Image 1 (tube, rainbow, N blue to C red):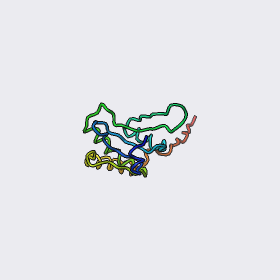
Image 2 (cartoon, rainbow, N blue to C red; image 1 turned 45 degrees about the horizontal axis):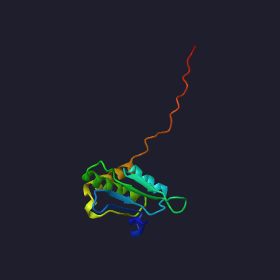
Image 3 (cartoon, rainbow, N blue to C red; image 1 turned 120 degrees about the vertical axis):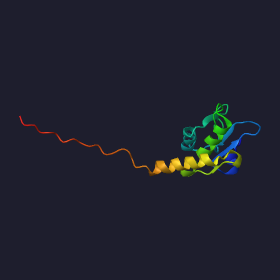
Length: 133
């Protein structure tokens, strides 16, 4: 059982499954949990198939949620690209799924997050107040 990411030599291969409206985000067999978890956080739903018995690898792939519209699937797929690239992964998304406005928005959000100063500040300790008695 192969997958497109393994076949194409990418870390994530995003595409629409032929003759369906299912948008896949495939990773190579044995992809690190860190990558799979990132796809989970980006809104894709993880699916797995384990072999009968103990022989062979467990196959994992991600799909855009089936209940969202075609436009929402395109935006989800496109918005995933900047964070995946920023994490150092090689990603392919075909032109028919690419939404330029969604990409620019996601890239801008990523830049803003990285540029934002840490909101946590050192704890301020209050000096004890002396009272005269």
